[in-house]
Length: 347
Image 1 (cartoon, one colour):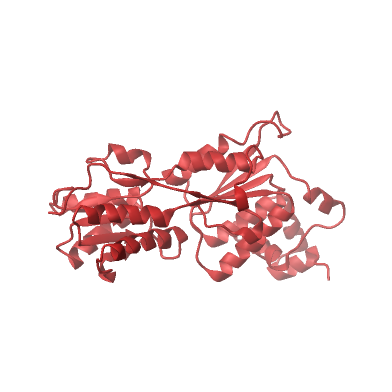
Image 2 (cartoon, helix red, strand yellow):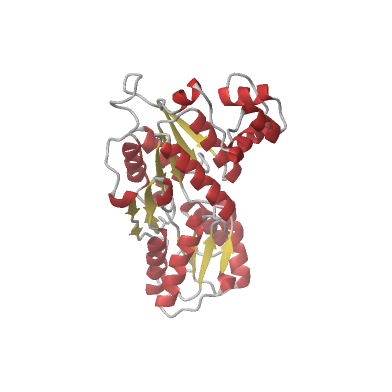
């Protein structure tokens, strides 16, 4: 049975006119109402009928880039690199494409909303960056949305996300496990046996994969995996500060801290200094990503360098058809261990 505009309106508990305004984007609609309408569109898999459906099958010069936090350099670097590659032959406006950066704030609901909006705008390409939310219902909803996008002719690239081959999306997946394992192995090789780990949010794939790498290194060196030495939190400086204070309370004999990313590592360094501890003489600190400020920290931060700009640029080229997709639609992007002044032998 064909789903109608009236069906969507009934599901969202709004008028058909409001549904039309949301889909056409030609009249202001409250954010909560817009999200309710778009959720109903997704739930009912509503598509436009008649001549409008033919129009919907076409693609525009719009490219959507979804990020968790545009203020985080990790996402800013990738988004900037994507945008540098989306011009050139093929665009109808002088070879240029319009890049729209969609800041989800880490919200699964906003992620789905933006994908729906990009589908309605017949985006030429969509690039999703960073780790995915590990929730079965949300994962199924995202997979369905990406499948509909690719079937409609939109190129979808996952940059820094696990592969999703059933959707038709191309994936450039960061080797977070391998990087996490090399980072912790470096510290264990320096003689550290009391290593605290500051993990990211529990629900993110990036968090789980980096933590799995850390634990794999502990196991390979015969070091017990003590749950008390792992603290979860957001990927921000405050989390690093608070988590390090908690780790020191739990384990006063701590000699090293591995942080979920470089921003968290800066917070860890601040907490150690406030406790009167020296880096690395008393406690070594390591981060992940090799963000631009890492080399200018004092001491410079040992970290895993992910080629964020290179990966973002490649995602942009694939999305624009300038570069062939990797074999099987999946490529693994490896990190490089950068040993700097923030790590040294255990005291």
